[in-house]
Image (cartoon, rainbow, N blue to C red; front, side, top):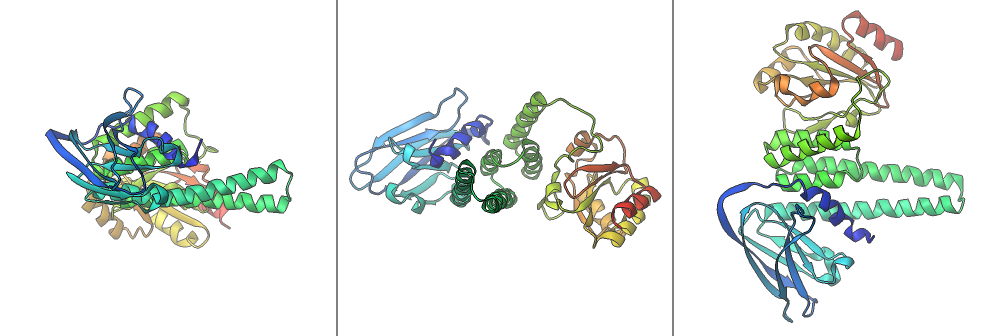
Length: 382
């Protein structure tokens, strides 16, 4: 398959989830612009739904010599659309649009695809800005994959193979860091869902689900909530539920900090992490906090940190407790109290509760309090 097209293939699995922002009445939208150097080819406008396994073609026009075009259509909801030249898709020519505004302008040249511009739609601009940057990283990654496969097939120099494997790892890490940054920076649910769908190519499904839950909570989007529900069902269908135990990889956590930035547990990999589940309203938690502060201050320079995950539902109380108890580490919360998604993920029914994770993200201890916490850390962080 042409790698220029692979994002569109991924899109099939994304748009199947979509039920976008509903409006009370139909509104008219126009997409106008100029497609240079396209001759008298046919330009297609499609709505990407896939409920019935196919795109919905809204209109097709034959371009004039000057390349100008004008599409007009009615819609009740914000959705995802695709402009493509017939017979040019296999060469990678497509432009994705979101009808978040009524008048959108597009200018493009099939001979210089990356030079296309979009005006009048912040969502479309954000989506295509992401795509342009992602394609560069994606192509670089696959170039390294091809290089590595070639070396392995020809029994290449082991040192070169080792170095290329390291390059591959660094490039996939760079892609995932870029995805995480893009999820934090964007607030349009369709843009976020597209990014989440693309992330399934390079991330574990459980990690994508954690990001999706955080984004759904941040945006209060029914679209993203549906995505979360569908992805959760897929994971449950494909896995057997087992008790969370020592020796297992720690499930991903992705939640917002007080500023709205999404923080992930996996971003702390390479350190020993005490994931501390607590709340400002929990008396035993507050009583245990001085002990946690003590070990944090003692071992913070020895590849050890704490990630505070709060079951608060009041942001002001949560923040006040952090300051009062001098909890000088990263803190996250979905502010949903006992409805928090981490409760079922980490299978606990009361707080304080914690898990200790090693530098590879593996759970090595649970429910450490008081002297037990001190002793455990002393044994591994000598």
